[in-house]
Length: 309
Image (cartoon, rainbow, N blue to C red):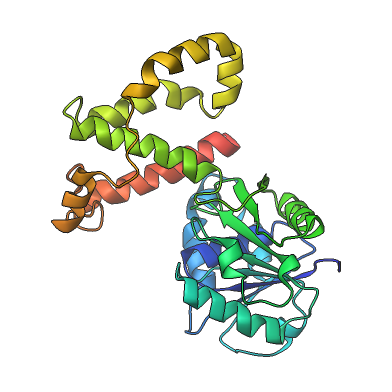
């Protein structure tokens, strides 16, 4: 497998721009971003990194230096495809669009170039089903905001070689990310399975009148949520003892939400057009100022947690 020097990011939306910036943390990499429409990638990255510069995590000069190694093009062919060592697709979450994108890429890129799909839920096995060189294909689930959240889930399809998975893991480490290997292609991969198990229970608590939405969020923030960055769930189970964990599960699991379908409450909110930040009302009511403050505070919290700034 070739040395990875040239990275092609396909799709210049929020995730694509941030993934391109992440890759420049490795000074040996040159990054090209491509999209079907003109996108001001530089301006988007500068805005996304505003707090990083304001808080002294990186300097303006460092940001400019990294931006110099990012090129944007709307060309559908050329050197950026012919010389690509690794391609990260970040188009919309649409199965046919992703399949069509990779079919075109396979015709243009070298046969030993590694292909990665950035998807949070879609199956890498299904996305790569029509490709010829399926062994060099893997899922790479970057978490939003990609320039701040360290984790990237590297997901093996039914054909991904160990060599491909290892090469992707090493490249992500070189760019400062924390890659984890999902050995089997299952819906939700690793972290989203756990996250949405929590969300299902949280929605159920509200739906059944046990507590309101604000209380549910407070209960997470001010209890186990505080220790999760330091103490993972299985580490915690070992700490308290697998015998105690077994006893607790024996008692409580029959009472937890186990529905295999979305909550009727969630469906009613969707059907009523109460879509959260998008419309100003979801489980709670949000003004535009509150929505924007929530996003700003999330970035601020992540920067403090990761960089102490």
